[in-house]
Length: 94
Image (cartoon, rainbow, N blue to C red; front, side, top):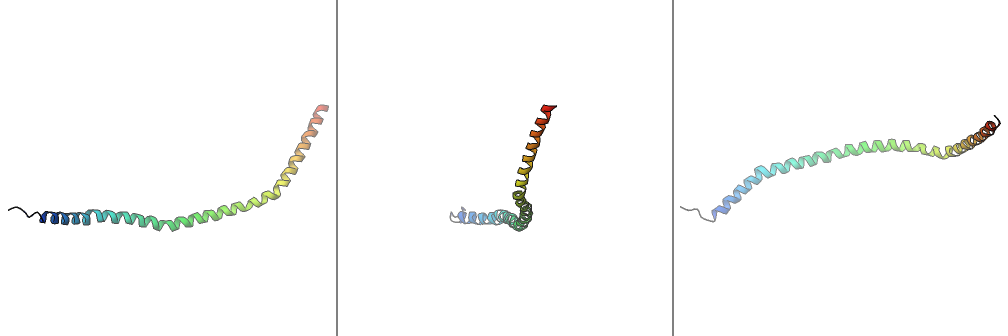
């Protein structure tokens, strides 16, 4: 007795469905679980980044002081330059 040719593709279809059910489906579920865990970790990461950004913003608030200190630094440089010139005159006399 030879099997009917029409039943071979049907059997292969059932075998393929079983392989799909027991092999491919668990792999897809495991991969989707990994994606879900990664997606759930995003909000905590965003909150951590927001806290660092707030702290960095507070650090940058001190930049406003540079506008007031720059003229003072220029004045000090001028005083030091004048003092250096006086030292040159004093050293020539010595």
